[in-house]
Length: 575
Image 1 (tube, rainbow, N blue to C red):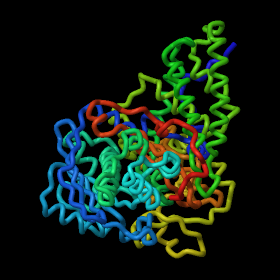
Image 2 (cartoon, helix red, strand yellow):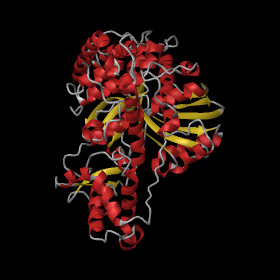
Image 3 (cartoon, one colour):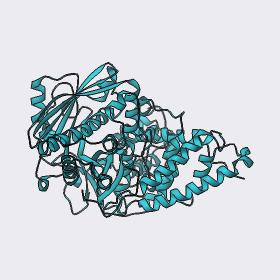
């Protein structure tokens, strides 16, 4: 008898463990994939309104974008740097290119202002109508390889493309009111097509990809007027890169309700799929079989980072083989086990869950969601009300009982003892950084991300108070506890709101939570460059503008390597 997989969402105790969060892969709910589905549905058209580039690639390209009934403008300014001057950190003061995305059509004065102000980073002031700023560098060696290939009448080598995955590498996106830009609340108030969380940044990222293609083609034709253009399959395979540092980490602590929403949507969809019943000959089985084969081809050539923080491509490929054999066996046996009331796909994932790596299991879950047609992809499903509140007429005893019921897991962190770190906002760029106590300056200005420590303080204060004291009166005596009272009351029933981690502990791994957050954006190719910095790639495999205009959402999560053949692992260049 085939065991029936659970058809209820997985419990938070397992899902929110740092090891599990650090194993997450993109799904169709990730912001870039959600964005593509949304734009393809409501209508999209993109054209170059202006291209002014010299023979070195200096100048600008202005893109005019039409989404539904709205017009947007994306302007990318180009001024290439020598490779040895490139710096991916946000504290950089120069880049190969920088860009702004506007609602509507900006004036020439607004474009000129943006060219200057974006380079000031945190001190700049956005022109009217701006919704995102971003800065980027070229992938110098791959960019040169692509230009040289096109100028010599040939397509770039697939192995080179796969090793890097992008021509343009961004250093982050600013938005949501920063530098005087329009915020999400404004876009929601006017019911703008990009009102969903991160869709403005995703639009900018998608257009950065187009800029990379257009800049490379321009430079190839400078070398040789008869240079060819990138083929569609190679353009589709190339994404954009992203360099992310430790500043990402506090985000998930500061936005617990958004974190809960991210996880809840995925977990509910997985449980809904597990509850579906279909037989071994159903179309879903054929789709899953094809996805497993595509995943095997893709993952075997996944490039590595400098650290072995995550399971290797070879390990995941072997686990996919285990899943494939199990799936084939269960399909053969299925007619004798229809009473299990499930489906071969979920039964396979359940059967191999204890045999394979965490990254492999979450990879299979992502593939299952690809064939779950009923899963919600409405952009608004990812929006979360981040208000924290509490009833002033509640009692301290009631709150203490709530904490003991829902936050008992925090006790195991208190026993670990060593907490040598603190978090602060750097003076150079106002970004979160981690410091060592007794070594780095600024401990007196540390960021309020020590939720576990503050919770211990709240519990001690509640235990020292009468159990029938009203929370309003309690806060008169402990006014600095107001945030934690609202935090505990609001999040007690938001199961997926808190990652099981201690940001201040000695054994905390920033890379795992960084990978989780990048996966929610839809990124692949997680390559750690150090313990606090990694590179990843987004929009690989995304449809081209003409395909998006025709309503195509592309091939889903995994890009198809051009040629679909075996790659020579020794025939690659560095980043």
